[in-house]
Image (cartoon, rainbow, N blue to C red; front, side):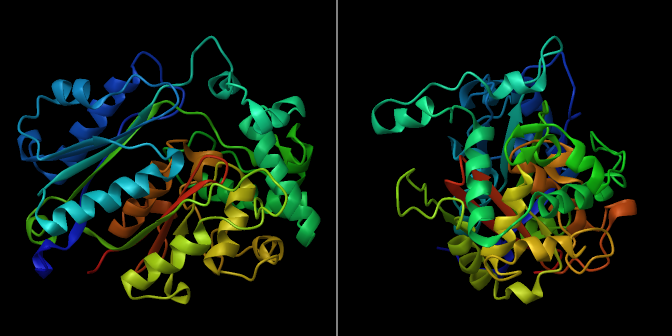
Length: 389
């Protein structure tokens, strides 16, 4: 593998379509537009792209053959579709970084797109209709655990029963992220909320309330990965990829499982930080996957920002909100910003690393930790990014 410092991987382009309640485009069209915007953002041409990695959401409608045709990119040296759900963005970036570092490709576009929302249907319809499992796993369906909401609720309840975590502590996460979203012009929900608002929101799957649950959004986001040498003369300040790692615990729903108590962040976090040559105390801002408030809390614990079981007290302290000790999900995350799977935290990390956050820009951005979570706490990806190499 090439070891030239000039081939260190950096993010040189970011492309974001309109996000949220956006209708009239397919997921494939969102994907193509996101790539075009990322390439233009970097000051490059589509003909400069020689690698393409794709992650599609629940609505489908995006495939590598069609996307390559839409973009009219020829002679790619790297082309694949990846699927580990919300951890896929981090995994795509890791593979793109390895391809650039090794010389397998020079400029790789990583894209996620989805269009699950329909103008005549509620957002909940996008994630229903899950096929019921058979065999032992079929007992879950018989018990009523037939939705993602219900299974995350089970994880949250186990953490509560084990460590005394409360609904009010989860609510502190929702309130903090809405405060960040109020500063983000791209956020779907910008109206501030209080803890009382959280507690008054309707129960979705006990103990998870409406304001504990993420948005459903249409749109696409892409990032462009190239070498530090090549990025030096491009349009945007480079965002250096210092570290990355994956972990896929995929806990069984059986006695003895650590489901709800430990996630892949406990393994992927230290590995990515070690690769980056930094420690958890060096992290200035964290962009964490937040399909639910509980996901943020347990990820903070597993990364080591606080001790296991002390996540509730940590988030209730105000540490995550604007002005707090650890800025978390500075664009509002998926709870209040927009829901683009792992591209939500990654895109905000790029914005913060570039110093382009505007009213929400954090004062210190030397080390940015990014997480992705897939399935029901089954998959995890961690990235460590920085504006400096």
